[in-house]
Structures are given as structure tokens and as C-alpha cells.
Length: 66
Image (cartoon, rainbow, N blue to C red; front, side, top):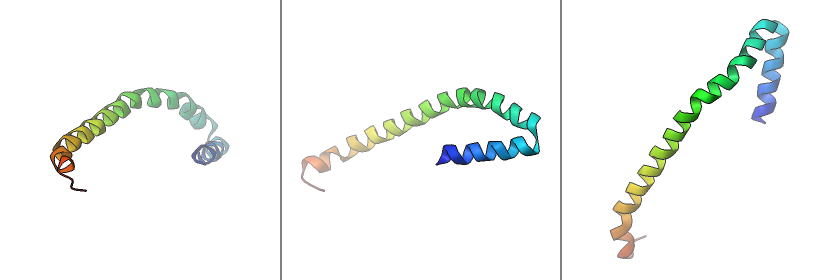
């Protein structure tokens, strides 16, 4: 659904301003490449917080608390 909305938005932009739409089409992969490390950093931080939470909750789980 998001891809369809993005496609319709791009077509509307193309109708109103073709050069701007072409520029957006060229810049989109660059923005995606720049955002990849940030996504990996977010996944890593989320996993680290999950590990810390699991370690802090381990004694309670061993004692039978839910």
C-alpha cells in the first residue's frame, strides 16, 4: 500500500514539475544508502536494550515471577 501511495505521489509530482520529479527519482537511492547505517544502528541499540532487559529480568524469571 505504501508503494502505491509513493507511486501516485511521484506521478502527481511528475505532472506538476517533471524536472523536480526526475531529481527526486535520482536522489531517492542516495537517501536510502545514507539511511542504511542509521537503520543498522537502530537495530543494534534495540537489541542491546533487549539484552539488558533480559539480563535484569533473569533473576525474577528464575524465581518464578511472571
